[in-house]
Image (cartoon, rainbow, N blue to C red):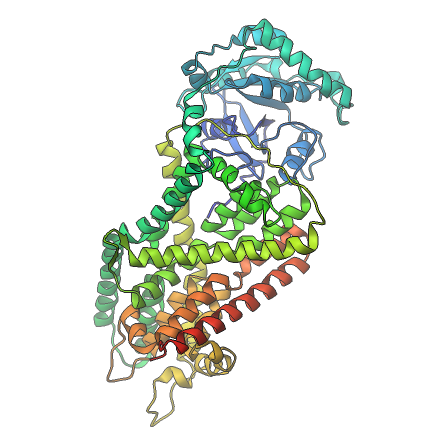
Length: 635
């Protein structure tokens, strides 16, 4: 999951990094502070200001804010509002910056310098960092920083945010005491700049570029030549569909060996602990807790980590390469048919990793109606938490064989489930369009960054963050819920003379039988009904919950088997298909609903989202189960 981590350092002068999207500002922030924030190659990735700490060569401790990318100081979206409020001293709990570093793209000064002029009018001490100088030189552009400093009347330094040592000039400049002296007019200059001043900026920038001999555009770059294919009206969509299809094929094909290794290690650990601990008295409860609760629960989720890593790897590579904005452009016409623009694509794609950062990324959408609809349909994107459930059911009921001598059948089914979620989201958006758009016209305007090879360090950091987040959930929420479920499934114990498994007499067994009344029409037994309850906190908990329930369901004469072959023997195909359909539209986890509440400032939208998702999930499962029974899949 892509989470924004904010570090607070109350002491020291405040330095704010400001710049257009795609200018390399966040990469420079990482270089200055050593902060491990993810760097993505599309506009609007920084949806919250992030803070780090910088100590200069002279020992000066600075607080550094990485503000969201913006094109002007007239905010049009929530993330641009953050930058506006900080620079104007209107952010709650934060003072105005003591120094502003305007990060500009050396390959696109025409666009970047307008923001510099607007920031300069605020009266704050200002430095211009001409970033991406390596890319500019590769394109034959040379920016004379000394001449640009004379034109702007502020210090100008060159930086390369993606290379070690690329911030040396800036670090040296920050030790200059005169740099931090605020003009006397700064305190009064907190109103928005007048429109005539911003209009005049165009002429000013044009004059600066002409005097620096940078006023001529350099056409026919490598990115332009690649886009002739990637953005082609016929080949472009075919290429996009092929890329997405191959990603889902790789999720299953590449993960077989590491998953088998993790499963073998988990089985070995459970068997070893089981032999070390006695099965009688109090130690018998401890043995059951560790083997049936902790190892069976957590191990049942960790086994799917390779698939999640593979999925995240491809998403990060697409981000780093600059392909994602092209995908948004290609999908703009399709999304326009359901009342959205292509700008909704990036938040929705982020939701494939986790709906929480996807919902947060909607702050880059200026249109309030489009933002609200994107928030409502983001939970329908198949997040990584669903992947363990999908993998479990597909592995148990879908045979592993090739289709047409080329494709993996299990990967094909997984791709179909992802497509089902996308189609469901488009259907919901289309229905909302019929009632909310009232003939509104939408156009897509977004920047297409240059293509470049993915940065290995950024991809590695991104993967490490996701592994850490996933394992933290396994060791935190999932482990706690698994132990809680083990307790409910173990107490009270079976009465004397009981012939059925002890879990059927427990609190969990009683709850499961009550819920089964509700879920029986869609083919769910009491074990599945129990697993759905902790799954409200985190979807992947359903797998560990099933592992715990079935481990405790073993009779005295029967040992608990591995979950996959066990459900293959005890469930019908109709039940498995119904559960897959349920998880395509399943009600969101509580963390996601809390995020929706925070982003919409109320409980109305979270309740609406939870309600319509439950209705969709139940209807989809009911239809799937009944159709499967009609085709003889109930045996």
